[in-house]
Length: 232
Image 1 (cartoon, rainbow, N blue to C red):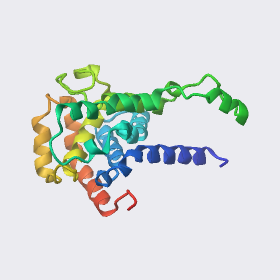
Image 2: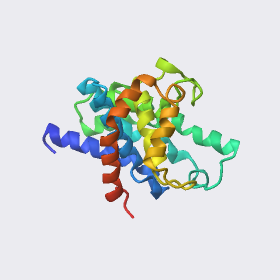
Image 3: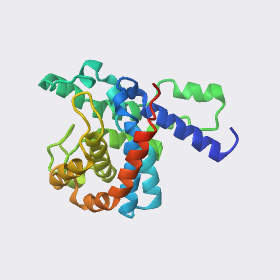
Image 4: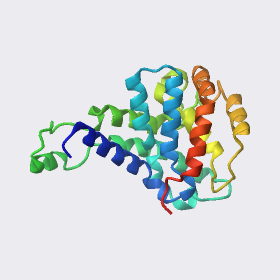
């Protein structure tokens, strides 16, 4: 590995693999993290976001649900309605994911010293723009525009912009994909359901970009259906 391109490819490969760790618990997820990243990129581009911001959202988003690794299979794979206690445990995945991404790694300084790496020994994940954004997205992608989301009940512009974009992408994939507790919803019904939640769950200003992106999102969704990313 001797080029900037090789380093970027290696880093990206690792992010994608980490984003799929929890999916080995539920094969029905079908590459959820990667799909949501692709959808988010398309929506951000339709909103004419700065190129660097689009790239940060795209590369950070695959890790948005990594906290699900700590949620028991009995909850993730349950076909019946979750109890209040189970729902509370499921909602914890946001904070768990943010902690996994942002916590300081024990022994990092020793590791750098032994490896003779020419790196700042005091660095931490917050120094990396992708990991910093990934942590914010993991924590806040289930916050609602009206303040009735979780985990912190943030509302409107207190929710990070990137998470307001990911919320659309996440919901689109959630509704149009098979889940243990229900079948996939036809795309037209999913879109109608999301439209009704604009101004409630979703940022109204982001909806314009989402609406412009529907044809591209649908095309990408069909590609994933034809090429399942999760090994069997």
